[in-house]
Length: 69
View 1 (tube, rainbow, N blue to C red):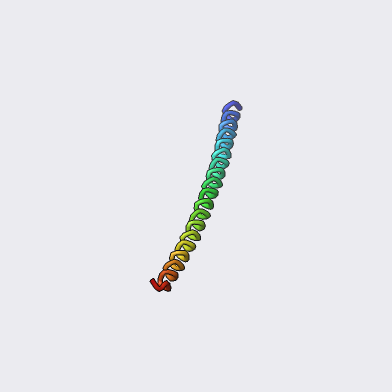
View 2 (view 1 turned 60 degrees about the horizontal axis):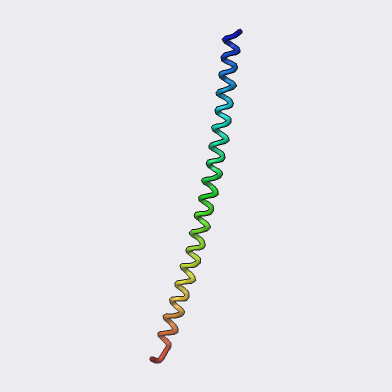
């Protein structure tokens, strides 16, 4: 009976450890997903700024090209 109780206790400890590990893994996945989304948003913002800068540069170029210096 003591052996069975010991095995049952070990099983409970193992299950608790498994649950804790699964929760930790889920939290890490969530944190990684948030960081990924932040990085993608940053890249989108940088791309938008680059497009705006290119447009401004092209407009400046066209302006100077049209000037009769």
